[in-house]
Length: 425
Image (cartoon, rainbow, N blue to C red):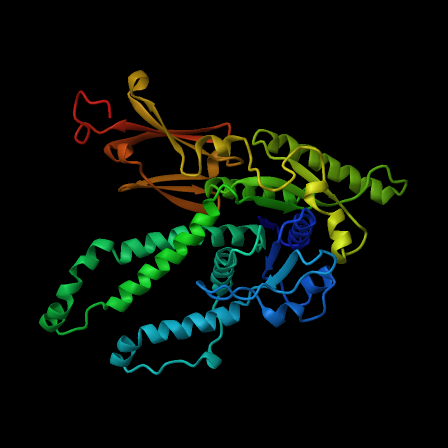
C-alpha cells in the first residue's frame, strides 16, 4: 500500500493510520517510512530513537531488521525507517570494490565509507531497496510505504523501469555473447575491454530492478493519494492522478485529510467547512468516472498520538463506498486498458490499429506524444514514460491521436513497406 500526496497534506499520518487499521484486522504489517527521526516515533507513541535501534531493511538483497512493534497493536504492527545515508555509503563502497581493476588502472584513490556523503537522489534508491528487502523477507501480510510528496514519489516509482531501459541500451545483452573475444580484442587495441564483473553487476542490477518493477505492477499493490481539501490542492491532486494513470499505478482512494466538522456555530469553522465541502463535491464528481472513492478523515483538533487516535483516522473506516481492505484497485478506466495500454483491431472497419491508454485527469494541452523507433514516448504534464511498441504496431505509422473521456487513442496505419498487401496481421 503506497501512500503519497502533496507536501504537508498528512501523508505520514494517513500511512500510519492505514497500517494500524491493517494490524487491527489481524494482518502482520510493516510501516516503512523515510520521515525524519522523531516524527514517526511521536505519532506512534514510541520512545525517541526507537526506529534507529534496528533500522529499516538495508540494501537490495538483504532482509534487514523488522523494526520494533508499535504499542497498542498486539505486536502485529512494526515500523522501520529507511537510512539513505547508510545505504549510499554501503552501495558506493561496494561499487568501488567491484570496479577496483579499472580504478587501479586510472591511478584512483578509493574513498572510505566514513568520508562519503550521500548525493541527491540517494533516498529514492534507499526506499526502493528497503521495499524490495521487506517484501523478500516474507514476514508481512501488508507493507505500508510512506512515500515522499507526489512528484518525487512518482519519479521514484518509475525509476526501476527507466533504469532497466538505460541498462539495456548501454549494455545490450547480445554484446555479452562476445565475452570470449574480449582478451584478444584488448591485446589488439591496447586498452582494457569490459570485464565479466561489469556485465555481472549489470545483470544483478537488472534482476533487482525487475523485482521492484514487478512489485509496483502487482495486482496487490495500490496507491492512496492524500490531500487536504482546499482550492490550492485541486491542481496538485489532478496532476497526481494524471501521473498515476500514466505509470499504470492503481489509485485505490483519494483521502481527504483534516476535514473539519460541518454545522459548527463558530463562524470561522463554518466558513472553512463550507469551503472544504465545495471542494470535496468537485473531487467526488471528478473521481467518480474512474471508480475511485473520496474518503474523508476528520480533523482531530490536534496531532494524532498513538494507535487509538490513528484508528479513528483510518481510511478504511471513512465512508461507505467500498474498498475497505485496501486490496481492491479501481474499476474505472485504468483497469480497462491496463498499464501498458491495449491494441484495438480496426483494420476491417477503418484500416487502423488503435492503441488505447487510460489517462485520467490529463488535459490535451499538456500531452506530448513522440514515436521514436520501436518506442512511444508519452508525456503528461511533468511526467514522461516510454512504451515499447507491440509487435504489430512496429510495422505501422502513427497517423493521429485523440484524448477523450480520460482515454488516449493512438491511431496507427499499416506501413505498406513493412505490411505485405493482403495480410490482416
